[in-house]
Length: 299
Image (cartoon, rainbow, N blue to C red; front, side):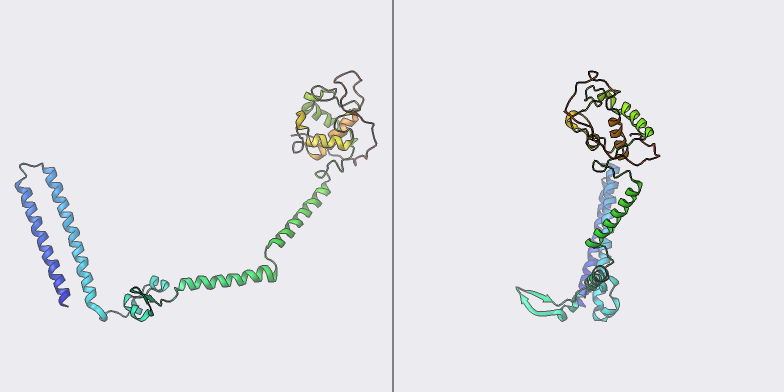
């Protein structure tokens, strides 16, 4: 108690000294006002006042702290004044250190037997519960999307798309199942596409320009229907011919290949480009089923 009283007396003495200093400073400013700029004097007075207020606040805080220290053991029990955050983090007051000290000391350092924070226990037990739920859902019941289940779902989706495409009968056409088209409307539509997209290299009548002649029996990449389909579909990049796959639909490429075979011999020998490639004798090919569609427009 004497120690606290001494601190209080010192704080009061310091406050009185500060007040005297402020009055002295104010008197000095008043005496020298004739020789100094008023604005500067006002600034110094403001700074002194602010510092005095800060010091008063610190003294007030110090007195409050000393007052709390005086209460000592008469304060409310620790268990009744713990905050929610202290409970969550399992924080204990410093006065409990003696109870928590373990019989392990080294270099002046004592080890405390602090309890595990509740938040850590919640997290730990939560991971165990999650693991049990995960195991039951994905590996016991088996309805979770593990790798095998994802694979099966993707395979089922692919099969459904395949069945739909087969029902349409147009998107699965390639060089292995291409069929000859004899429908006059489809061939006429292919002729128009040929004039727009192919005539610049092969000529309007397929007589050949920069590209080879397509009406003679000589073929560079094969003269069968599947060969022509493949050439149109994949293109010949080294010769400057682009791949029409993705630009024309598979059905349109089938119609175009059939159109090229349908114009064989329409341009006399000696007209247009010189023959290129190997001589190919025409072979019978299966004919595509009749279709009423006339959608052969290229993009």
